[in-house]
Length: 426
Ligand code: NAD
Image 1 (cartoon, rainbow, N blue to C red):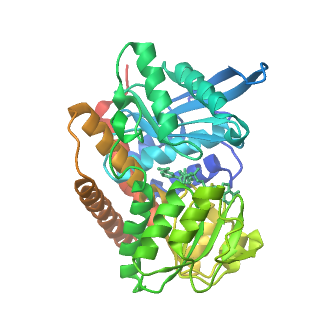
Image 2 (cartoon, rainbow, N blue to C red; image 1 turned 120 degrees about the horizontal axis):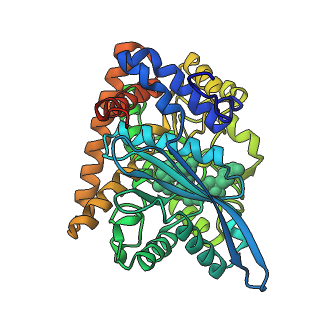
């Protein structure tokens, strides 16, 4: 018997999310010093739960959905990470997303491990009552591993404060408590935090502003293209708009629009609210989806799904700065091409950490039952993001490595130090 049993998921395809993550870990090993002996810890999720989620549909039939909750690493604290409802969700994708949460939480020094969950479903095909039943049954099924001190879910793609409210209520009913701290991203009335809804977009803006300053890119008048106009993309675009940048292109699942002069952001946001997407917006021209990647712009914000910036698209991009609002939008081969082309990439594991940072504030406020003002929250968020980025940038300069590898270096050192100090049980 070999001392280390190979796992079925150690050889994924390189462009898959888990394959991308494993390659990112391999790249950080030379910078881990003696901690490198623990690196295998990062390549295996600590715990993965697959659950069957049966619900009765409105027409009386029964449907089964597959749900997941993966706790990638719990060395530094309870699990923390969102829940995604999407037809492409797989165990392997959730593993990667949970691993990126471990790295992200450590990069901003939050006292959390990394976790993520999801259901393989197109929620747009469910009625509101079906969505509620599915959310509640999923919460009950993963109830054996979540909790305010164990693992704290939050919103991700296609999940929102209402879904968090149902999760909080279900967990509370099952445990006979009012467990506000079991999820974050809740409605304000249920112990949610001011500033949470826009926090991820705000973090994208704050890290983007720092990066722009360092590469002498004026935000006033800068052209911004955004893929994904949901929670993250719309909030980031709005803040860049307020800083004087022009949002010249937007793409989502309903279409791609372009306006060289910049959209009227209030009109675009109202259109998306009313229709569910950017498609059909009259304040810009509809263009085909693939030309989005050829558009001249200064800042590109991928804020939709993984694997969007492929090697082929990376060769065509015109941006000077890429801000990864989404998790895992750039595959490793594309990362190399962007670096060669001198296009700066602000990696997901720091760029979109604003959401989990305010989730942490929400969790702390729930425990103390003492709530902060939005100004306090935004100030603390900016301070944490800027401080974390400074350390990452110093690390990148010192080793002459990309911001992604530098973020992994800072984060993995923290995770593996905790691992080493705790020691191996038994
Ligand atoms: P959301 O559901 O609010 O929005 C998703 C957006 O992506 C929508 O505009 C949708 O139309 C678009 N989209 C979906 N499929 C697409 C496709 N094939 N092509 C183009 N656009 C497509 O989700 P969100 O919360 O904004 O999450 C977006 C990304 O940000 C995800 O990668 C998520 O993991 C990441 N993220 C979210 C948070 C958060 O707090 N919500 C935090 C960190 C990272």
